[in-house]
Image (cartoon, rainbow, N blue to C red; front, top):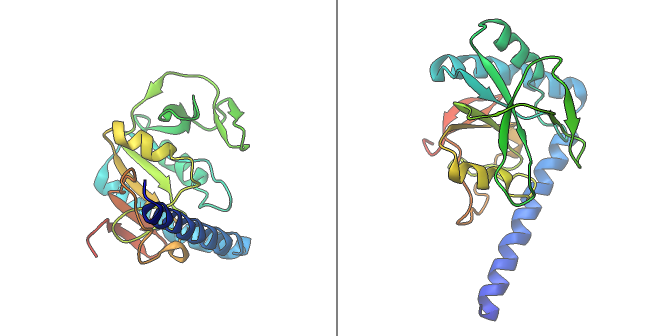
Amino acid sequence: MTASFRALTDDIQTRRRALRDQALAAREALSPASRAALVRQLEAHLDDLVAVLQPRVLAFCWPYRAEPDLRDWMEHWLAADATRSAALPVVLERDAPLIFRCWHPGAPLQTDRHGIPFPAEGAAVVPDVVLVPLNAFDAQGFRLGYGGGYFDRTLAVMKTLTVGVGFELGRVESVLPQAHDQAMDWLLTEAGAFRAGAV
């Protein structure tokens, strides 16, 4: 690796960290009332999108660092049809893809090293649709998570529809995607549901 290429790579990583940090700071600065209002708007668009996509197994993420909290919405979605299943991601190994296990209200949970709950037991399932948290994101469907690469590794080997879920305050012109980054199929915010790359 030449010095100039290394400097360019370092610059891109620095810029990506700055985009992630700015998006996180803006989201965490929202008041609880403001965040709840945005989530209600987002949920209305989620209703419409899920009606189109018709998943039988829908994966979501336990809210972390002021992400949209979809737990109540998931409970209502499950209650409306007994054939539906929800799933949560599980980290088995640091550098391995995620697996997903079924979740229902009251299911026994453990917490990972970040304090995020996950199903304590159960067979792995393959979701039809995965709701993926967005920090910073762009219209092409690329996103910045927390830097662990878990979703990128998972989506590289798991064929499923992905819906990036976040707030408009995280939208940027470009997240400077890298070769390993996996683009979302859809983006969902309080402003609506958008096919990635369509605008």
